[in-house]
Image (tube, rainbow, N blue to C red; front, side):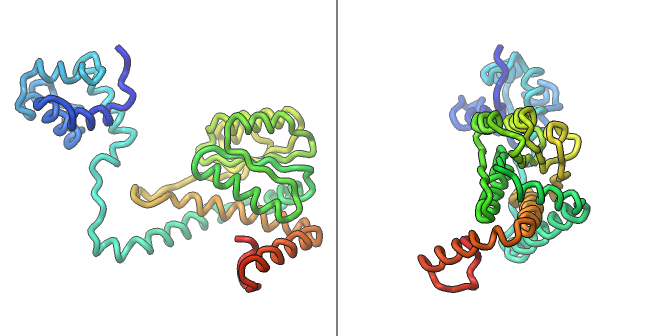
Length: 293
């Protein structure tokens, strides 16, 4: 029998649209998943006030061979996403006092943790390479990593560099296949195992490109790239708060971009002046505004 793709979603659907006994049992499983994953069939039947054969039929209706099979998938779901099943958001008084502090404190901690151990000589070397590259391919897959690839392009083009970001997996490999020794590939991956990003780096390196990865050490991407800037995401367990890792990655990116701008020196100034002139003329003539942001 085909394995259930997402047992929790099937349970949620059953709790809404199943028979009376199915709705009762599905609701119980969703509210007490740990109990059900460990209890005997007699205990489950008694808790839900149904018969043992009904429990077996329920499991089969979810796409499982029986209770044992169902409990396997339920335990797997609990291990992967159990923290999202029953956590309650804090009360309004707590939220008012802690949300802003939680965001800012976590962001500061993430940045300090990520940048505190950076090997600046290596980053300067990378920036100097980027500054003289014929073209730069920035790649990343997924939410944070794709945002970083796009932001790297945004930081580099204004310095007079030919930079392009690709977040589509197929296009990453295609652009990597036309890389040359004058190409520098900058790859971002929070996990280090985004398949298209790893393959793009491998392909580009095959054609002589310099490859740089901002990713966890010892990951697949780290092993594929020529140069690695180690980055390890560390979360604080607050499932309602967006990840603070993106602040840390952005700080690393800004360090590289700043070092690249300094390496470009006067070559970057005319581009920056033109962008400032154009944007301020079209919007508000306030020199204090950020450059094109």
